[in-house]
Image 1 (tube, rainbow, N blue to C red):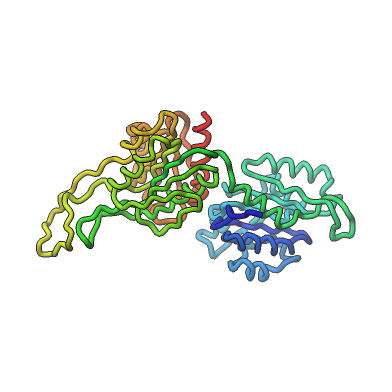
Image 2 (cartoon, rainbow, N blue to C red):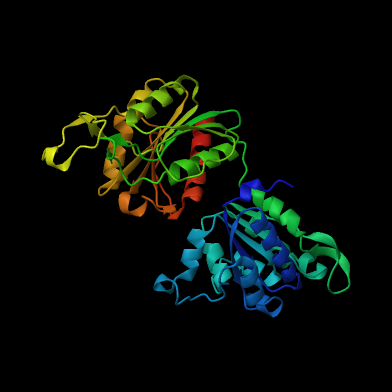
Length: 400
């Protein structure tokens, strides 16, 4: 059982009222064992079978039970949880919760989060065989399976708590965990060579000082991780960051814009996808002092030289079929500025975000603009979730 794709994922486990709720404890442990970050939502009925205290002890986090959460900003706990999750798993899903999900209700916290999240959703039904066989239940399951990015883990056949034998028993936790892991795996970029830049650059002034910016590199590293999971051969050219690169990724460490340009230029001719997510310094000091410049000898002005535009220069070297993705971090006028950059640099896609909403944060709100199709505004979500959306769009462009 390979569940490595669960590492560092934000998994939100929803538990509804079923005797099978005790199996959620084992499922939660499986997620944690493989490096996932976990939170738990319990319906009122679920608490009759397993206590919130038990799930809190296992998850290490407060268990969420109320639709209106006065501890959350604006009491909108369901929105915060929906944005936090990389995947929502409902296991067990009772007949009652299936009916609410199918009908688009938001009458409790779990159904509200199901409706509000943009993350993939995994639903594992569990109930008596007669309840499972009913036309209404099957209709609800069929309806739920039609929802975008929503997957059903079919129940198993066997001994049930009522003493009968039949279909309706909750799938084993290992199977649910494997289905969760599969959501994060894709072969959409199998065999493709993807070149990604990430992080800031540092332009040295002297032995002690440099010009840089607040970029954390988190977005670029998230893109590298999702591209690796999609089967790509990824080269990540990164400025100084505290981020951990994904396994099976070729990491090239650089400091300056010129070094980034040279590293990318060596690989451009065989690249299928180029994603320029780095925040490259536009300027560098005119001269470098090998010692520390003394305050008394430093002038009131600092002469600067414009750096090469890494994105423009690398695009010149890419194969014609390569997909070109840029980023635009703006303080104001996001759409207008990003659109101008998309056209000026002849990109296929540009991902725009406001500086105050993205730099050094774990989540992001991205406006995706395309050369040949309508724009797409992504909701605020984790950078891993945003990376998944971007890689999905890139994969589609390669197919076209």
